[in-house]
Length: 254
Image (cartoon, one colour):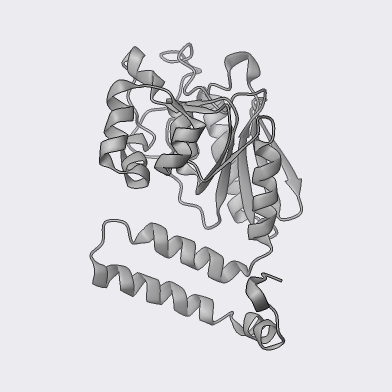
């Protein structure tokens, strides 16, 4: 694994740390490969339930390492295989939460969009900063951004390349939580442990149904939901027994 990626585990929560502070966590080819390997390993681990993607040193990710482009160390750009930034073409079976400090821009924005949820610090900034260099979004940015926040707002971000502060990102639905500076990783890991404590079969099947319905007509989407739901029902007995024993009263998750 690249020196720029580190994996830390706390029970069912896996934190993948992007650690190239000297390059503002920019991703070159080796780092992209290491990110992909880390998330594939997480998805294959039966004891891992939720992952975090976090950029070390006060920056989430400044995008692709532009100094590496055109050199042997550059990111791969092909129609097949993994994305230039690494895991952006993967659809995992488990959720991933982005813990965003500082800048999540260009390819870093695309990595954050690839995650299921985004926890951002008050000082975080999101943006298509690659606009100023003529570098395109090719890790899902033009696909996931409008699906998340709508075409009009996405077009504003894509065309202008402006920075979007955390408060505005929360208002437009680009992020799910805003926390004080310095607390994104801890907040994301707390949320991850909360998700990991829930019945996993149903959580994962409902998540996949939500992802797979995109672009389908209603009847096709409902058929997918039913198929995923049937898989959850095969594993529902433990939850029903907890409910019958009184768990969940007054809105409690206990």
